[in-house]
Amino acid sequence: MEKYTKVNVVGDGSCYFHAVTGYLELDKHVKKLQGNKKYTYYKKGNASRLRKRVVAWLRKNLDYKLTNGLTIRDDIEDAITQDSKLNSISDYLQHMSKPGSYAGQIEITGTSNILKRSIRTFIRRGSALNNVGLGYELKGSKDDIHLYHNSGSTKHAGLHHFEILYPKSKALVISKPVYDKLTLKHKKTARKAVSKRRLPKKNRTVKRRGKRP
Image 1 (cartoon, one colour):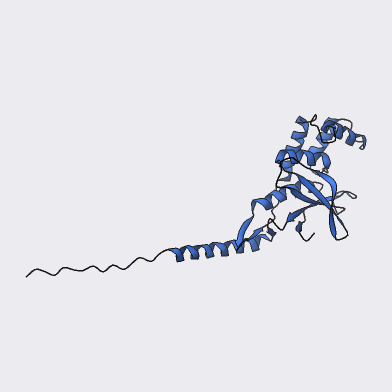
Image 2 (cartoon, one colour; image 1 turned 135 degrees about the vertical axis):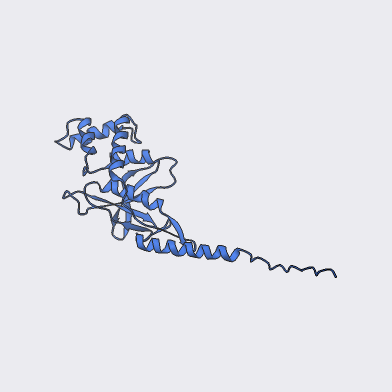
């Protein structure tokens, strides 16, 4: 856990989409602000937009083959058998389009393919983090998204909660006010460094010619 900063997101049933878009916002704001140290800050992302993109991808890729040989269609049909309120793939996708509908492995697969990044999810076991198998590994992905999966407080009792695990090796997560303060200080330091590198103009002595007698 010491390798990551855990960033909480709102528990409104869309925590997965909040966690992923929040992670992307953290990536977006990484800056070197003190020496070689990198910092960033958390900003709420557009969870509803990502949800729409994921549902659209699932709708278009029902025959996408997974590593276990099954398809997205197979996974959704299996999910339908576990929910008496859902009777078809169309029902599932319509349900997942609604704010507050809890995302799982199916949506993680779609997100990974949309963002072209592997998604790894961990839980805490004692003092260590363990991969629970919930996630998706995309070949060629070099910049994974790390999430924390926890039995937490959400809109619906009994559901698990996704949060962000941001690697400290990428940047240290700080508050926006502190980030802005460091950014201002960094700019002032940079301006001073530039001014010191500028050579001062040499004073030129102009010899005046005397008047002829």
